[in-house]
Length: 263
Length: 346
Image 1 (spheres, rainbow over the protein chains, first blue to last red):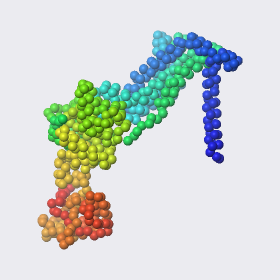
Image 2 (cartoon, each protein chain N blue to C red):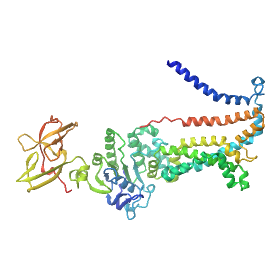
Image 3 (tube, each protein chain N blue to C red):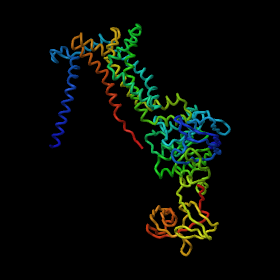
Image 4 (spheres, helix red, strand yellow):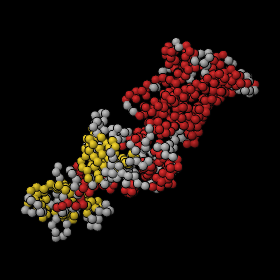
């Protein structure tokens, strides 16, 4: 078979698959700015639905962003030292702990949420606060932070690096903040983006844990799909996209292998 | 700039690891102020463990004591010992520039900015890497990295400088250049230095004294000359340079070997000894010699290395001058002097 034809065929197939995936997304985004979706684009474009969503669901947006940042703070404080501890003493036990960390990811979010409700549902103040959702989010995202940081820590010669710093008189805080943290910056950054993205988009857990006063963006989305007109749901989706796309793109850019001169 | 040397003393320092492995048998050792002491031995002989004990990266088993001058530093971790350390893998901080690496120890010691800068500039100049100051570590070659590592270790004016196979990761030519440079540096600074290597040429070139180690024990301590010419035992003789084994019989003033006889001035009886390749010579015509056949000949440039069989029970390694034409299959006559023999006790 001649090569230009083969190339054209492959390109065609790729574009077809891409279109299959992208068109619904574009349709949905378009629906959010169409005056009346059932009449089509001819009815005109408008930002009315977007403003409406911001009006109706501003609190869910704020809560989602707040939760994502709080979740990030928690996973940084818990996850980075945990990853360091795991990298420092690789043993069968730490392998086991590493595997166990994945459990919240593997178990359906609904099950985790149910477990949280059974265990802590009785504490009313806690149950009805956003902190309850935060706990769920931290549980779910922590493994991602630990894994990202651990991957970087395992790729550097941590032991020698620390011994080098020690020989120069550096105490543990000096070493940790001056040498270890800066050298796993790329892992921390990748983990952070992952955590924020996952927290903003988390639905399973959150749907079980939320109260009418603690609705996050995805829960609000489900709500609007169920009870609002299609254009509003779509405008809401559009806002979600605008929020999450830069994060996804940054994540992609970070995960690209970095070019490094090796000697 | 001279750092007055520190005398190091180890008494009864043994090291047993958590899994029960005995890495080092009880060791007593004194390192003179300003001396360069080289630990030499095959991997697993305990040389790195000893260095790590002196560094403070490992603690000796109970009873072991380590003194810097008259100060007992046994309980001090490395952070508090004020030692400079150079690692085989450099251990430079990738998140800092060359100058940042060198300044690190000074920052930890809260040396004022101006003084710090002056010191860093001085170190850069001493290691002849001033133009690399702002480079990142990724951009350096292996030799440059080790220069930075040396500068970083020396910047804080340590009491002792500890070098753990610093040249092993470099290629041969660079290794030799840097070896000369380290030698000059250590002499100039007068700092007490401990150098660990498995390379005997490096050990002999750098060491004021060499400690040859084997299986967690000291096999011999001495000047390079003594270690080479008067090895204490088979292990040392074998480990440092090449060695030939001779076993023959002295009868009526003649040493009898499979390749013939040589006039010999010692009482009758069996003779067991070792001989370095360079102690064997091609015998001049008309003078007594032992006849043998060349099995292989390697031209090495400065000399040629022959493997000769038939002279002694085992084939002999012979270093011959480079100008004589010799190839495999040739018959040669060899001789050696009695005082070149190394007596072997075991």
